[in-house]
Length: 93
Image (cartoon, rainbow, N blue to C red; front, side):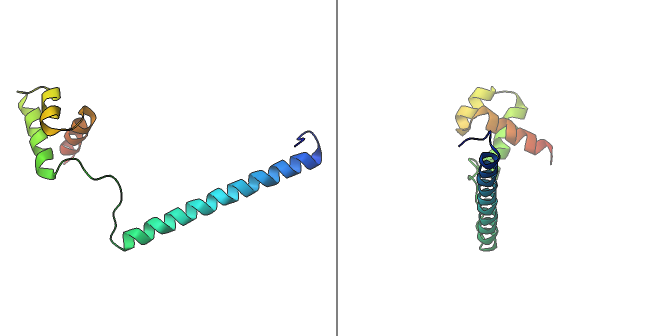
């Protein structure tokens, strides 16, 4: 495709517009599907690795300052960022 000519630029812009149109259609379909799933009671997303009780226990162990962060993560079977996320969410309450 020769984009130095007027007709080449026109074809290039038409292809770009069609690609943008298709992308917007995909986005609309995805949003409609997510809304329909939520209406049926489906939540979606990755499940939490720990229950609320175990999250509270992990935060309690962290606050007691007896165990290291690595030890708490090993005991709970979670990563450090996950532990810190639980700690942050407990402070917001």
